[in-house]
Image (cartoon, rainbow, N blue to C red):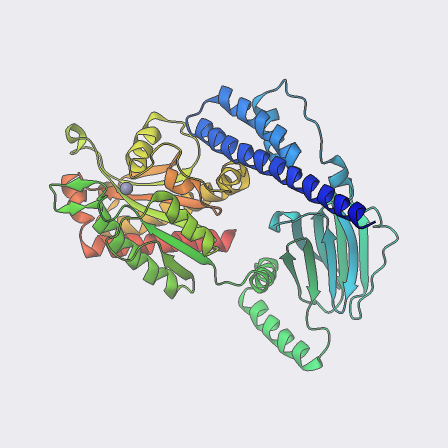
Length: 458
Ligand SMILES: [Zn+2]
């Protein structure tokens, strides 16, 4: 008997360890392929992109990880690719349950979700306020599920289509609802149901606000709700480019990019803190930091956005001509110009592909994030130009535009990230200007205003 148990245990251990070795093997393969894939994106090598995507799907399947993103991308690149919906069953019953808990409705998913899974809107028809939550997912028991919360006149739950579960709250007292996302859950909370006092205060507040902003009343309400949900304290990581042994662009030894961008970054931090943001710098002194460590820091701080600050330089024969401010967001190089600037900024310390960043690939694949970064870059660029031109005149500040480029420093960031070129160190006039406190403070103000307006809209 004893020996049978022993053999049995050994068998279990053995099978587990074999499984572990197997998993480890595919994990390594998966990781290595991600890097190769990333490199192929950055070098715009479509053939390799397809090759590595196929491998990623293969290894992903073995590891039982979600490869939907890769397959979508593969389908986009290779029209002959047959899109197999591996996760069909996953999507089909992605919502496990919809339950009530006190004044909240809890929606449980069979996988981790993010903010994009919920879309909120509201309407007022006659005297009834309607809060509409469209939730990405399929819940087979939507129809029989009945939830009632005191104070809410009606709660409707139904599968709008095969991909969207709708949850509609109707109430006459304009209740405040907020939603939270917590791993596999969406929690919709209905506020100010219980105490009468609170209700009065809320009402008072809202009538005040309504008087103030009668015109965009609905917007106002939406923003209040958003604010409650995602606290206004957004975290921003500012990355002053280069540092230490890497001085970046330079002019006659005395004007160094690393010093100028550090000063601007510090002014930017002050400006943003004044606006109520939580701000961190990747370096606060003349110190060398490897590129991947800069975004790693931002990831660790759970930053909402990542801003890398740089100054430009042109080749000697173009030094008198090249000037202006530019904003970049991460994307494969499209133009020769973006490639050249990227090559300059990438020089820092990227020795081949000797770095690893677990989620870098997702950042690239996540088109939503690229779009967000693009939007942010537009806001920053607009506000930088506005602030600088007000001071120096339109002619003197050239709009270098919003561009996309394959910047390594942006690759590892899990959040929308933008690289700013604050001007040309090499230009006789602009080079001098950007080393003055006046310009540095102004551009910092412009960037901060741009960031603020980005967050107000998104
Ligand atoms: Zn630089």
